[in-house]
Length: 117
Length: 113
Image 1 (cartoon, rainbow over the protein chains, first blue to last red):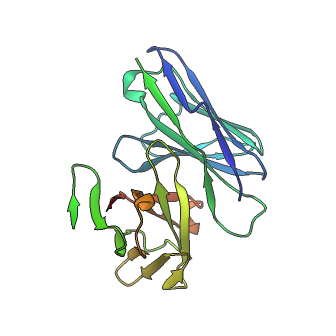
Image 2 (tube, rainbow over the protein chains, first blue to last red):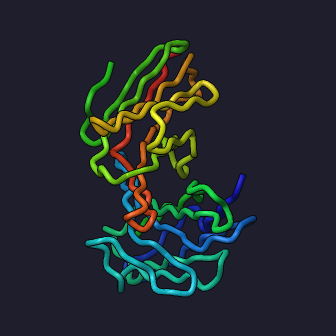
């Protein structure tokens, strides 16, 4: 099946620094990618929809300037957490849909655990 | 039995028994539903999906039932094994919502050996 690679798997940073998370579709072209965040023992909350070559669409309550999303190619989307603070500590997960497939199946990355000190 | 924890409902079953995990969805426009399994520290793993024009779909050891009248979805796991212990999420998608996949609250399944 299709593979979505997400890096890094874990990052620890100091408060005030920025962190970039990469999401790559390895064997398919992803015109649309989605970014989720997940707090412990909670569900995945959709943060934004990333469309190749255009601006991301953010869910209500998600700060655009805080969570910068870039989807410059059909196989790569990045999420940058700018000026991270302890409350940004969370599990971030990306997902992608195969633009060439006839079904709606989403493929997920393995997630990035962000810890802000 | 099934109980509601602080954040995540839990379901405990004996190894070998069948498990039934339930999910209520709210968007009547949703037309595609998916069940995911998530193990600790990992991304969700696809289990089975179903479209709104069906009410039942079977996979290997799993069955999904869809009741659109009451907006209810269930996942049945036959002969539950210790490896099935994980958190299970139902998710819904509506074409009218730009194909976004929205996750339900999840259920933690614990298999007792």
